[in-house]
Length: 160
Image 1 (cartoon, helix red, strand yellow):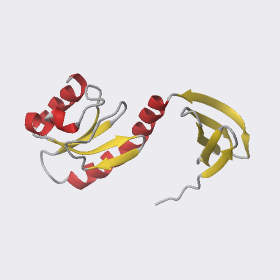
Image 2: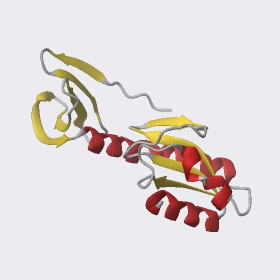
Image 3: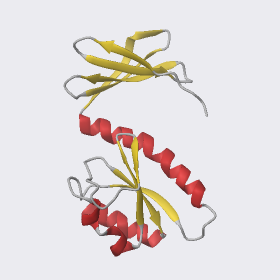
Image 4: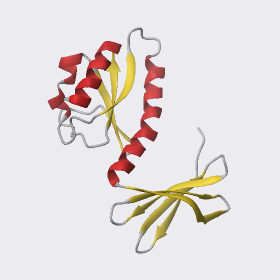
């Protein structure tokens, strides 16, 4: 496992800056503002104060981006774990129809015979969510089951 050094810089009266140097020689990071907003930033490795790109993000957009970056790693791990089991597939599915509703309300296992093994929110995995797990906008469900079951689950989580 490669260790990445994340630098955290307090920005008095503003929030914090967290960034690191990528292999391409640039610094990539996030400014977290005190009011809850975020800014994705890119700067030169030798001059982190010279910002070459800045993209403001709402909390929902930051949450979605974090899920997009974190979920593939979890799914890849689960695929590796189940690769020798015929007929079992793993997918990450956006939960759009059940924001502010519980996992139990989906009746997903009963309706599709698939299981939600984790929910990725803001780059953090919530493993083995129970029936009272409350979905939020931007959540990605990590689902395991047959290909047909996963297709049905995608329809339910998207359309209700």
